[in-house]
Image (cartoon, rainbow, N blue to C red; front, side, top):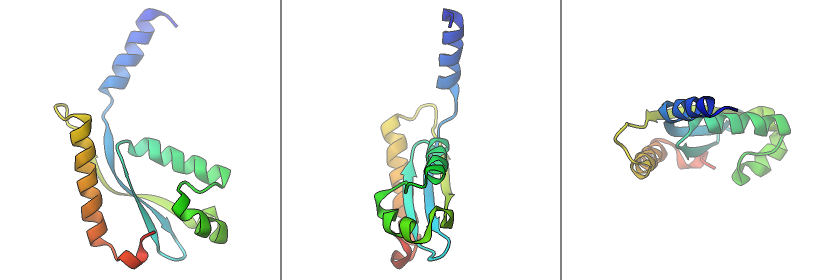
Length: 114
């Protein structure tokens, strides 16, 4: 790869909008949900797809139900998303997502959370 192309790819990556937020990995049979906070929603969704394709639970808390009901009973849903602001540090972005997670937990029935 030539130097100019490498610079273009790097600039493109750095300009890409960063979208983070709260995801819910939900068991369609039981209704139980595992809340996930992430600074990269697309990356986590790809990870979940890979988890389904390899039939391996994406999180240890899901292992028992994953093995009992099967991977096809789980879906990953975006519950809330935010875009990282240009002047926002990574730490501030992470803190904002943590606050979203706390608010989401308050909205949900604790009996339906993993």
